[in-house]
Length: 375
Figure 1 (cartoon, one colour):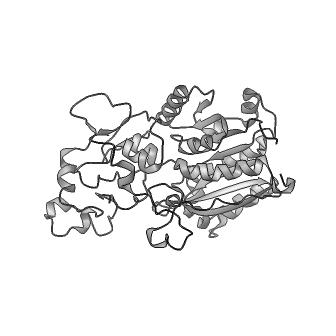
Figure 2 (cartoon, helix red, strand yellow):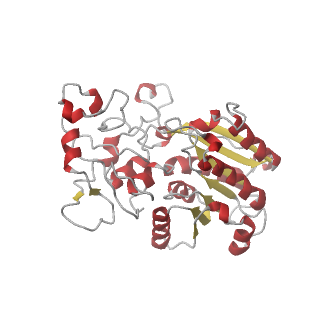
Figure 3 (tube, helix red, strand yellow):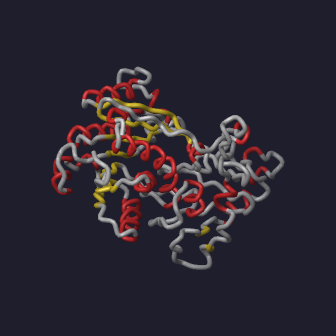
């Protein structure tokens, strides 16, 4: 491709749009998003409207969509899309889940990336997944068999794949979140993963002056007090909204900064309840002076010094979303069981935008100027 030409992308399993934000920041024009969850679709559409973009949101089961039809509807030919990217549901491969791999219907969704790539033939593919994908068993019980099959399927389509376990904190995200990034480009693949921009405080002297990891305090200290649910009935547009129930305020009270409730054996037994030593992420209070633990779709972490949950906006700050980005959908208590994704889960399930931007920027460099052209 030549410089000055619009570089295009299609987003699969878009979620709340974290990966999309990073890819757009890298300079790609996202033509279409595919997402099943209705609240995530509301989030995507609201931000598309605010940013006055023409991105089309396809809501529903991705298996029901024909890539041929989508190409025609978008007005593109086979091979004209520059990037196909997405983060398929990871629960089937997660090390904290049941690890049912492709026995879990969600595990099969990974191979929808192959189905779309086979038809669309994008110049590059970018995929984010949990580390468990690398060791997930196939139907024959072979450890790592799913990943091996996935890479083999890419190779059959004439792609060469490279992958790396990447730490979000290495790229300016105040969160210790490790994920596998896979980048496949039509052979030959000259892609090189981006170098870290930040480092552990203990390593900063040895890594050519890289700044230390960003901390929770740096991310959220300037946000001020959130709006209380008892004060208003409408969620504020910035989602800096506190829904913590009284009982959870009582249970987190007395837990020191950076600690979890189960480790505080001096507290009353009725406060600790049924928590065990293994419950290190339940009733966890973050530390202002360190990066956050990995934000997930289940437990909501607590504010470093206030007896309350972190708000969705604080989650977004810790994940690396810009303040201009908004969420749609409900804000639930941490014990809530909901079919569709609430705002905390939308953030926890998404890809940190700065990490997506770092990888997508390197992909853009290769697409604009392959090493073979020496431009």
